[in-house]
Structure formats: C-alpha cells, structure tokens
Image (tube, rainbow, N blue to C red):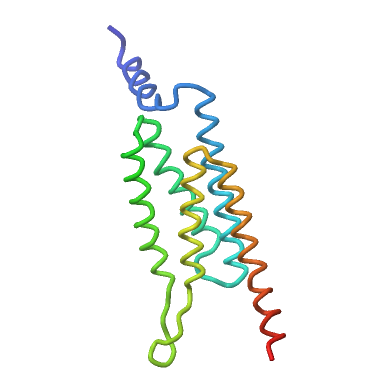
Length: 164
C-alpha cells in the first residue's frame, strides 16, 4: 500500500492519461493551433473591414469546432456519432452567426452582417476539417475564402464602374 502522496500522484497521472503518446499529443497540438491560425486569418480580414466578429471570434470558433470533433474521435466515436457532433456544431454556429446579422433602415430593408455570418459558419467548417485531420482541405478552403473576400469585392466594384 502506497502513501497518500503516491495516491495523489497516481490520480494526477490517471487524469492526464488521455494522450497516451507523444505522437498523439503532437497531433492534437498541431490540429488545435492550425485551426486557431486559419480562423485567425479569416477573422483578420473581417476586422480589417471593421466588422464586429474579428480575429478572436473566428479563432475561437475554429478552435472550438476542432475540439468538438477531436474529443469524440479520441474516445472512438464512429461515423453516426461524428455526424451528430458535426450537425450540432453547424446548428450552434449558425445561431452564433445569426447574431451578427442586423436589419435596419427604412422598413428594415437594409441587411448587414451576412458575409460575417457566412464567414463564421465557414470558419467552423474549417475547424471541423482540421480537427478531423483534413488539414490540407482546411488550408485550401481558407485560401479560397480569403480569395473570395479580397477579390470578389474588387471585381464587383470594377464591373459596377463599367456599367452603362
């Protein structure tokens, strides 16, 4: 029989035994950090445009989404359970994004925040992809989103100037 310090040490080790190897711990760190960084890139673009949901919001959405899929994967959740987790993330983040949409103007005819809401939603999808180990897909999606956010407004502006 061990001493009370041995029991405390054993309990402490048991509580932190969810990462059995250094390889698995490194994978988790890479996925969580990458999710936060990719979310931060999208948030940076939004903050540059003066939108309320900026870097921190997007980083937290991506990080949270990655974590929500990582933990069930760690405990061996199968496809049907993972599908329910993803459905919950999509619905929850949709609710969060809805909070960024504002209607104002005469008869509430002007709507603002749709692009930010869509960006938050996409950020969650990118976080899910990273969390599930689909880092290249997440990086490509982030690059495509940044291309859309930076180039499409310029193209529309250019086309508007050339209308008769």
